Image (tube, rainbow, N blue to C red; front, side, top):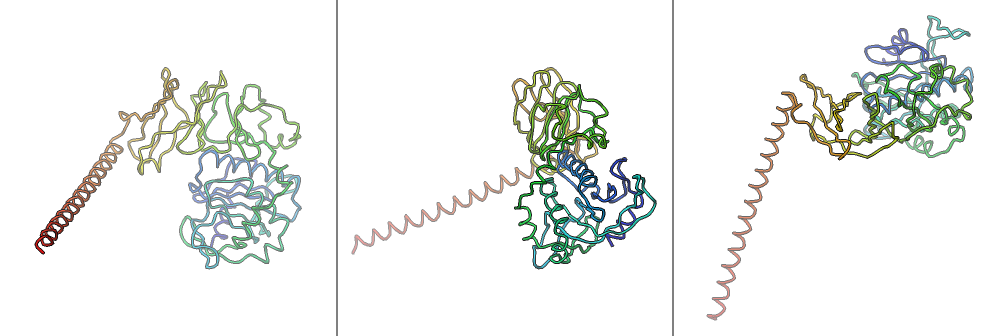
Length: 405
C-alpha cells in the first residue's frame, strides 16, 4: 500500500534543485538517483534536525555526481513509521531499518531535465525513526548498503510496521544486531564526505534571515559565521559543489555547537541558540561575546510539550522578550531574559485565558495531591502513636505483673 502511495506522490514531487514538492502526507525531494522523504509534521528535533536533513540532501547530490554508479540508488525516509513490529527484534520503535528493494523514481534526461515518467529501481532504503538525526550514522548505513548489496539482500527480512498516517505496512530490514555492528565500524571515505560545508542559505528555508549571523554545517556540527562578506552566488548549491572543499577559506566561524534545536534573533545584534529544548546561549555579535548555558523556565505541564519558540524576539533595554507559542487559541506567553543580570522569568501577565485556566487546574490538582499526602501522613502518624501507646501500656502491665510475682 505504501509503495502505491509513494508512486502517486512522486508524480507531483519536485527535485533537489527546485522548491520542495508538498503533498498532504509526505514531502519528497528527489534527484536522478537519490530520494529523501519526510512524513509531514512527524519529524521533531527542531532547526538542527531540519539542517541535518539539508546536509544529507547536499551530500546526496555530491554522491550522485562523484560517487554513485549508474545502477545505484539511495532512499532515506524520515518519520514514516511510528512503530516497528517483529518477533525477533523488539516490540517497539527502532531508530533505523536498512533494506534493499524496489522504489519508484522520476526519470530524468541526460541534460538533467525531468521526464514525465516513473520507473522502479533496486534501491538501498534507510528508514529513520528518531528526532535526533545523526548524519554520520545515516551515511554510514547507506554507504555500507551500497558496498554490500548482496549481503543486505541475503540478511534482510520482512518487518511489520505501523504507518504514521494509519494502517500497517511491511518493510525489509537487516536484523538490529547487524545495524548496531555497522554503526560501530569506521569509514575513511565518510570522514572526507562530512567535511563538506552546507550553508543554511543554500536552500529556501524557514525561518527567514537571522541578520548578520547565520549557520553552516560541517562534520555533523553547527557553526555560526558572519554573513556580511558572503557573495550571494556562493549560496548556489550546484556552484558550491564545484569548489574544492579542502581549500574553502571563505569565512571563519565564531562559535560551534554539536547540537541545535532553535536559533532566534532580533536580526540585529542579539542571538539565542538553543542546544536543547530547555537550554540556550546568548550571543552579542558586535563584541563576539557568548554567555550560557541558561535554563529556560518551564511551566511544567502539557503546555511545555507542545510549545514552540518564535523565530525572532524584541529587546527592551537590557531585557530580551522571547515569545513562546502554544497550541491554544489565545496564543502563547512571554519569557523575559535580563542580559545583564542573566535572570530569566516567565511573564505571567502575558498568559491567555486558556493557559490561565490550565495552570489553575494544575495548581488545584497539586493542592489536592498535597492535601491527600498530608492526610495520609497524619493517618500514619496517628497509627504509629496508637501502636506506641499500646506498646507502652503492654510493657507497664508486664512490669507490674512481674513485680507481683
